[in-house]
Each structure stands twice: as structure tokens, then as C-alpha cells.
Image (tube, rainbow, N blue to C red; front, top):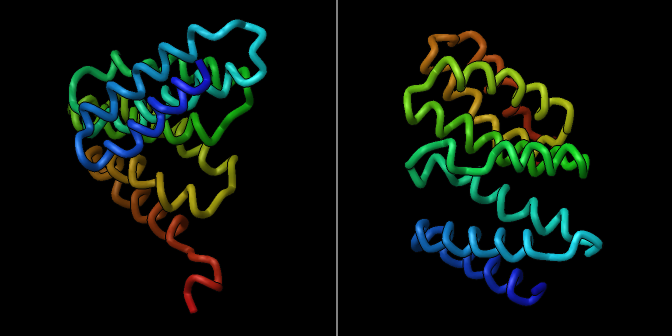
Length: 163
């Protein structure tokens, strides 16, 4: 089961920029494999989180309904595992998907939680990589001052990067 999971995850990663639909199918299969592992498997939780993170994180690129991403499952699993980074990646995808579907009120509510989560992690690279989601919400809801604040805070590169 572990080997099958690994194969599906690698296949999804390889397909990400070639065929997103194929990548998502691979991650869905990896999710099914992980869900089928025995409850006492020591890495079952992390194996259940990984494909859900990628499915939620790529939801905005895939189109379709945001209700089909498994975000609630991801939220529950990451809370149990105290895995804020995976939740942030999945949440960025969900926020962006809500914006793409013009569901601005929902996106704005989730974005506020997302910003707090990103700030609590305190990882500059992760902040720069994911803050686009919150800024997109601000752009479409007319909150330009907040968008500029987020852009300014998230673009403060470490000294080594700016040299």
C-alpha cells in the first residue's frame, strides 16, 4: 500500500504542469490508498493529508465545484496532526477557487482565517508563495489598502535574497 501511494503521488507531481486532470486523478487514487491503510499505521495521517493538500491547493486550476475538494477533511486531519503548513496550502487553493467562482463573501471570510494562519506560521517563503490568494480576495472585494499591506509585508525578502 505504501508503494502504491508513493507511485500515485509521484505520478501526480510529474503530471502537475503537463495534465492537471491526470495529476488530480493520481492524487485521488493516493487519497483512496491512504484512506485504506490500517488505523494503526504510524504514517497514515500524514499520508491522508498529502494528497488532500494537493487536491485542495490545485482546485482553483481545475475548475469544478469547490465542495468536491475535500477541504473539510483536510481541515480535520491537519488539526489533529497540528499541520498548519498543509492546511495553509490547501486553504490558498480553496480561497482562490472561491474567487474564481465569484463567491467573494465566502472567499473573504476564509481569507481572514487564512491570513491569520499564514502569519502564525511565520515562514517568509511560504508567505510569499501563498499570500496571492488573500490579495486576490482583496482585489475583487475592493479592499485595496489591505491588498497593498499584504503585498508589502509578504515581499520583504530576507537580506540574502535582496543582495
